[in-house]
Amino acid sequence: MLVVAHTMATCHRLLDVVELVECDPRVQVVFTVAPDVFNVGVKHHLRALGAVVLSWEQATRETFDVVIAASHGGLHELHGPLMVMAHGAGRAKIAIRPARGGPPLRTPTVYGLDAQRLARDGRILASKILLAHEKERDVLSRQCPEALGAAVVAGDVCFDRLVASLPLRERYRRALGIDDDQQLVVVSSTWGHHGLFGGDPGLLPQIMNQLSPRRFRVATLLHPAVWGAHGQRQIRAWTQDCQEAGMLLPDPCDDWRAVVAAADVLVGDYGSVTAYAAAIGLPILCRTMRGPEKVAPGSPQALAIDSAGRLDPSRSIRAQVRAARPVDFPRVAAAITSRPGRSRGLVRHALYQLLGLREPGRHRALAAVAVPQSTAAGDRS
Image 1 (tube, helix red, strand yellow):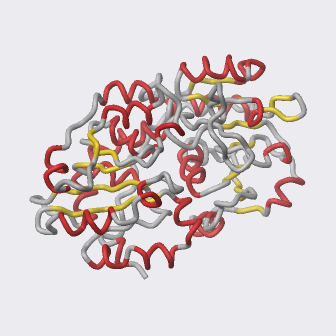
Image 2 (cartoon, one colour):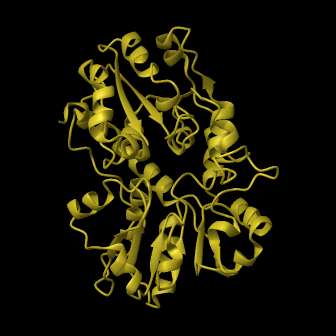
């Protein structure tokens, strides 16, 4: 089985799926890193995990029993039955005009469920297109009806693992160094200048200045593409004062779900982490920089940012954090997946169908994510 990692974000999502089959002695899993502007650090991360990593050139020459990917670039060059999936909270991104970005199309097209991404020379590339929700099938029927035969509504493995991790909340908090009388405020930013970090670089210092370190700890989760675009050295330099003031800055290789499971409040934007946090009932404050028009109406991200409280930097941040409340989290969770708690079995079944193998009789529950190894991510050099 070939696993195609385009970026660190897609790599994290694919590793959740790989864990469903890699214990089977009949299955050999190998990885490749696809050409992508944001693939910085992916090969190093996979090799640190002890994975077999093929060069892209070798991967395009070989034929595989199954190829799985969570992005679309270059997939037409690979040989083998293809399974594709989203790498965020559903497929919420609106496609934009290819020339210099441009405004959204008059009829918004949901990225990843369109013929431009799913077809090549009139042929649907994937044998199975994993969907998290029945509503995505409706979108697919409008945008690329010829792909409906490959669609499988299989839920969201990422969300199900986040839910499975919630019972370990206190262990995560201890590992992160959070005291019993402290609140953990997580700041989450997607990539680009519409994200919280790129759109309002003064917000992190402001948060650190206003939240007493005796009562609050702050952890900042940056989208892996932010790290890839600017480099770890630059990101750590830009955030050095905040880290010295006690801010935790997890590495892009770390599993963000442990931090979210440990959190008391999340300050976010229109990224997937905000939607996932909202769906588990965390109090949410949103700070958006023209982001909402980039997400599909009715998507988990849209529901989260539409119903969350707005963070106003001109007012007391401490007071706003204390007043933050959860959104209608059952509604957000219901928008993320129409197969809650079932993704493990559904995705696993789809994989074994492509492999042409009988599923092993033993069915393990989805594991909670690992406990963070470092209590001071911001102190790493």
